[in-house]
Amino acid sequence: MTCHLPTMGFRLIPASRMLGLTANEAYTYFCLLIKSDFNTYISHVKLDTLSELTGIKETEYISKHINTLISKDLILYKDKQRHLGNKGVFDTCTYYLYKPENDWIRIDTDLLQADISNKLKGFLILLKCLCLNNTNYTGYNKSKISELLHISRPTLNAYLNQCIEIGLVKENEKGGYAITDTHLFKVDAVKNTPDRFYSSVREYLQQRGLIPPVYEKKYVWKMMYHFSGSPNYMIKALQEKKIPYGTNCTWAYLAKVLNVNITEKPTCERCSCIL
Image (cartoon, rainbow, N blue to C red; front, side, top):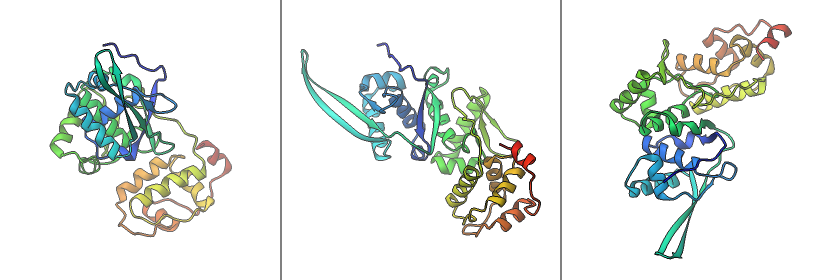
């Protein structure tokens, strides 16, 4: 059977909802996305087609994956239709997939043809879900990645070693891992503003049970200047400090912890260079 793919070259994947899937389930979901309409995220794909794309011969396992995707709200609804044809009665299904408006990653459809195992493709999709916003870098160590992805350490070690060996992942000298392929695993350049910078840092602090500071533009500008306009650099620095749960992170506290001088006022010339 020949599988005809859509012309649009990527799909949006909701990062948070993916966590907890196995590598095989993640790849099944990606294949389901590939065979969905780019705008509506509605798919009429057959189980046999999914079996061919995923390399999983037993369609009963595909059905189990679909049930898991439904439980994770990655598939919002499955509509089953019964038909009468020349060869008797047969069923078809329509899948209504969740289309994210935020908290998404972008994966190129060329991943389908990449010369690596399908299970490894699924793992890389999951790893991308842990990366900092608009990067292919995650500052997490193996223990944290294992915890967040619900993958055992031996399995995680095997995945990472394979990815490092073929050059798709590299280990950062200061810890954490980065996906090297920016064609398959898209990185979107974003022009940071004080509001966007603050929102990213606030979201990070809230996710880790910390109390973020109130928005004060003068302090946000100073943090932007210190961290070259990138909230990801500030977030990486915060990860290294391991601030206790429940800490009230005022601007003065953050400045002290991160060794940032918030008394010096950045000049307009300095500020313009970080945008």
